[in-house]
Each structure stands twice: as C-alpha cells, then as structure tokens.
Image (tube, rainbow, N blue to C red; front, side, top):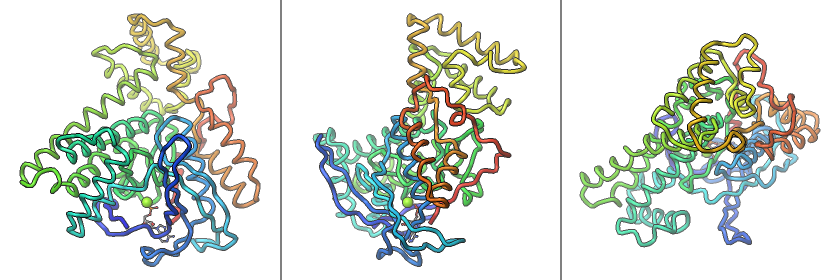
Length: 410
Ligand code: AMP
Ligand code: MG
C-alpha cells in the first residue's frame, strides 16, 4: 500500500502490479527486497490487469543495470521472464515479469499513505523502520525524525546530482516513485539525453514538461516537501515549530544539490581543486553546448580525450576561448595532466544507453526473439568508463528530429 502525488495531484493508489516476495540477507549482510513486477492483479489494481509487457520490463532491466554500472544508486534487475500470456495494450504484446531487487520499496508515498489515513502510529512506525533499515547511524540522534528527514534530503540531493551529471531523465518523478533509501526506482519512460537541453522531455504523457531534465532538482525538492508534510507531526507536537524544522531542512536542498553537482562537474572537467569561478566556467560550457546543440555525453568524452577542439569542424572561437580557460584553470592545480585525465575518465562515461540502441535491443528481443542485440548492449554498458574501446555504433547519438518518445508501458 502506498499513496502519492502523481503529476502534482494526490491519489491513494498502492501497487497495482507488483508483489513483494520478501527479504533476503546477502552474504555481505545487506537486507534486500525481492519483488515481482507484472505478476498480475493485486488488491490495488483498480481497473488495471496487473500485467507488464516484455518491452517495458526489458527497458527497466537495461537502464537500471546501466545506472548501476555508472555507479549511481539504483534498484537492480535480477531477471525478466516471459509469461507466455498475451498482454493487451494498443496491440497484443508478450507478457513478462521483472524480478526487482531493491534496498527497500519504501517510498515518499508510503509515508503519505499513513499520513492520509491520519494514522500517527503508523507514520511513526514507518519512520522508525525506515531509519533502522536505511539510516542506522542515526539511532542515537536526539531528534530522530528531523535527523531522518535531513538524511533523506541529503541522499536525494546527491542522487539527483548524479542523474544530472550523466543526463539521465527519470520521466515520472511522482512521489510514489521516489525511494527513501535514495535508490533510483521505477524505470518507466526514462531515457538518457543526447543533445544538451534542460527542456528535454521524452515521456509521451508529460505534456507540460514537469519532469524535464532541467526540472528534476526542483521536482525532487517538491517531492521532499510532500514527505515533510506527511512527517510533520513527528517533528514537533507544536505545528508551527514542526513546520519551521521542515522548512529549514528543505531550504538546504538547493545548496546541497549544487555542491554535489558542481563537485561532479569539476571532476568531469578534470578539476581537483575548488575555485570561485568554477561555476561560471561550467555554466559557460553548458551555454555553448545549448547553442551548438552539442551531444551531452560526447562533449565531455571529447574533453576527456583532449579532442574537443580537434573534433569541431568549424572551430567556434568562443569554444576555443573556453577551452583555453579550462587549460589555464587546470594549470593552477598541483595535479598533473595525467591525473586530470584519469579523473575525467572515471566521471565521464564513454557509453550510455543510447535511445536508438535501447529500442533496437527491445525490438529484436520482443519481435524476433533475438536476444543477442540486448546481450551485446548490456556488455558494452557494463563498463561505461572504459574509454579504450572504440565502438562508434554505441557512442554515436541517436539521429533524428528530437521527437523520440517513451511510454510508461502500464
Ligand atoms: P508507475 O507509473 O509504474 O509508477 O505506476 C503507477 C501506478 O499504476 C502504480 O500503482 C502501479 O502499480 C499501477 N499500475 C501500473 N501498471 C498497472 C497495470 N498493468 N495494472 C494495474 N496497475 C498498474
Ligand atoms: Mg511506480
């Protein structure tokens, strides 16, 4: 059972097609949830069939595994199996079940559910459970619930910064799709941005661009405000004081995010030290990229290999001036160019799941029962920071008119 704000509107929904099998303690002592997605109707299915089609489950498999290889906290995909049963959407599709492994499935919407039922006992029990399971270091905190909220905010600021740094667009950042563990969860119409543009949206149902690339940090903060509302009575018995505590923590989100993002951008540019104008240096690059419709991943890839200027056909004097600034900036740090290059290689992926490659893999598997395309893609995506491989077919951006659309697959 969970609730959530979907595109800004509150609904009590619960999982309509997922069954939590239970927990497993891994050999290193981590407690993991194992869940089946697409296993059939549940008591929350409303009018849905509880099923999933093969394509969307394979998309979750590919993208979540790619995210894991990129070093970004995420639920994992253990298996996708076809059910042998048809699933009726716009067309008849093959049914499939995804086995998902997660640190837990506790979402912002789980606490919203308790709060919507005016059940303070349940809210407190859930918060205690979440703290014990995901933030055990806070056990002795004098203000345990404020500390928990603080820690959740901090983890989300770091997670969303990681998304922004690789151009990942979640697509449906509803509060029921935000895990309190800080893992990326519920891969629906997600996709990676090719051409840099903060307004990039792929999801076919996101008409207003609410979940556009550039909006993700603000939406995360908005979701955390909904979490704060659900937790409010736990912060302080006095409503005004509780609101003050919540607001103080929420207000820290933008600065926390900025710090993670800027540190990540420094690493992407081979910078170890901090200087006042670093943010200006990064923003000037992004402005140039926007103007030139540059590919996000490949621009940083060219910076990593030192070929940014070599590559441009008609060298833009502004880009050249920017690159000289970067070189001068690097000259003011004690680290060697080789160390800078190694830092960049660790932070700039050579390979991301390019939209057309994902589509190719899904289509081969679901239409022709050919799994080799997906196997090859997964193999490339398993070592995204390996810059030694020259695989133009996997690093080239999708060619198209920017009309690529993704679907929830519900
Ligand atoms: P999602 O967009 O995947 O986060 O799903 C939003 C809500 O719709 C969740 O409660 C899902 O469990 C539910 N849902 C999605 N697909 C189905 C389906 N085929 N049958 C029933 N419920 C579904
Ligand atoms: Mg969901």
